[in-house]
Length: 346
Image 1 (cartoon, one colour):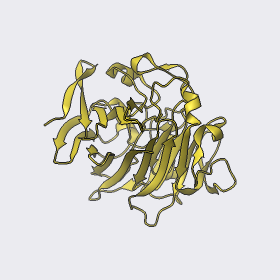
Image 2 (cartoon, rainbow, N blue to C red):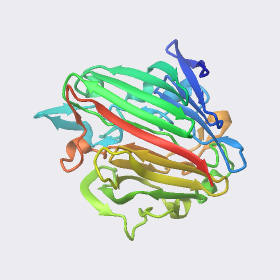
Image 3 (tube, rainbow, N blue to C red):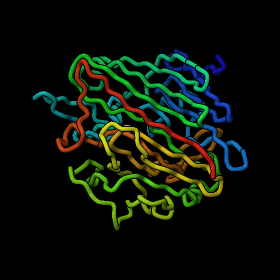
C-alpha cells in the first residue's frame, strides 16, 4: 500500500487521520476522517507546476469550528429544508434549525462534524479510501438508522471520483454532497478575486429552481436564457458575478440516474481544467459570498467571492416540493450518488 497515512490532530481526544492519494501523473488528494473531508487537491498547470486548488485548514480543530463547510461530506440532507420540517408517510418530522428558522446541510451536528471510519484501498490504476458512518435514528431529527458509505477514488486517468451509498431501516430522506471550495489558480493565489474573472464556466442546465430571499425554492423553474444565470456556454465567473451566486441548476438529463456532464471550468492563466459529471439531478453553484477574512491553510486569508462551489445533489427543500425528484429512501433500497471530477490542462 503506497497510500500515505498520518495524524491530522484530534477531536475530543480522538485522533483524526489523513490519507494522501497520489496518481502516476502526480495529482494528489488528501482526505481526513473528520467529516470525510477533502482538505487538499494538488493538480498541475500547463507548465507542470502543481498548486493546491481547494480552500481549507491546517488542523482538525479548525474544521470542527468551521461554519462554511470547507471540503466536507454534507448530510444527512444537503442544502436547505424550509422551516426545518417535512412530512413523510403522514407524519411531520421536526429537524434541527441552524440557518435561521430553516435546516441547512445536516443541522447543528451534521456529517461534517463526526469522525468516520476509514479503509484505504489500492489496485493497479486506482487508489482510494472508503469512509463509513452510522447515523442513528433521530439524529438531528431524521427518522431511521442510516448506514452511510463515501468512497474517494483517484485514478490514473486524472479523475477524482466521489461515490456515495446509504441504506436505512425506516423510511427517511437522504441528500449527500461534497462541499469543496475551488480556485483553479490555487487556494493561496494573491488577488484571488481577480482570478475568478479568468475562470470560464459552463453548466449543462437550461433552468434553475427559483428561490425566495431566504434561498428556499418556490417550486417554480426559471429558464436561464437571457438571465445572468446562463452558463450554457463558457462565461467568466467573475465577469457575471455581481453580488454572487447561490442557486441550484436543474441539470439536463437523458435519464434520471445517468452519469452525465454537469459543468466545466477552465482557468485561463494556469490552463487548469476541471470537468464534473454526476448522477445527480442538480448542482448548486455558490461563489463564497460569506467568506469574510477566514484564516485558512498556511495563513492564507479567504475573502468573499475568492472561490466557488459546485455541489452535485438533489434540489433544495425537495421533501416539501412534490414536483421535485424524490429524496425518500426506503428499507431494501440503496441510495447511490456518483460524482467525477476530471482534471486536465489546455
